[in-house]
Figure 1: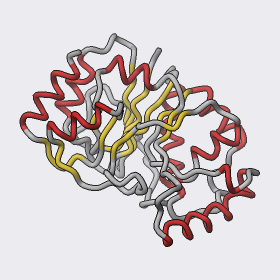
Figure 2: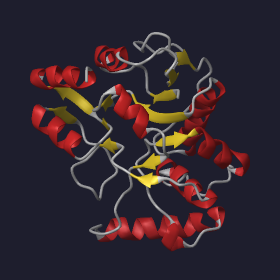
Figure 3: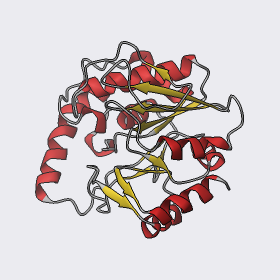
Figure 4: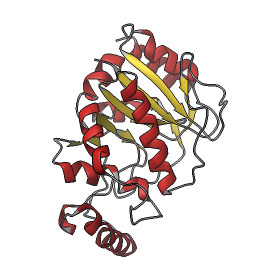
Length: 249
């Protein structure tokens, strides 16, 4: 199995040395590295990364992010990947490579829960679901909202892309949080709601908070099987040591 790590970044990848530690135990040809940035020469990135030399002009929450994601995953598919995980420049894996690779054998999304939302969130979601339901041909009660970073198998991605149109997607704002999961529902994919990425201690929020990775937070995330964490603004020295030990398992 070959897993594609698809980095959607601004200009660089944070914590390259920890990513290198994570990949150190991987078998040859068991992974690929793919980068789409706001520049054709992002630095630093991991060695042997395949960099998009003609990146799309992307904007926060815009359909352009969906298009950039599709390009990244398409490159990984063309390079022989069996599954792909979309990651950001400030994300880190929380598990050993073999665990992550096994985790990536199935399409997975981190979902926003529908209970406990405030009135503003409820109204905004209802309006967006109403707008996108005709596009997907699905009843509103089947639609979901995801964290933009997710895992997808080669088969599910190719099936989605067969007749999916990004440019006709009705949402211009937060398109990345409503597009992929609902296409997976549309095609009847056997996807799972999973702890793909920890981004906010409030489960009703998909917006990532800047966080300090401490041993306590690392232990919590691993205890409930999160695969990744973002936005990592800083890492406690002991958490660095603990992560390196995790990657060596």
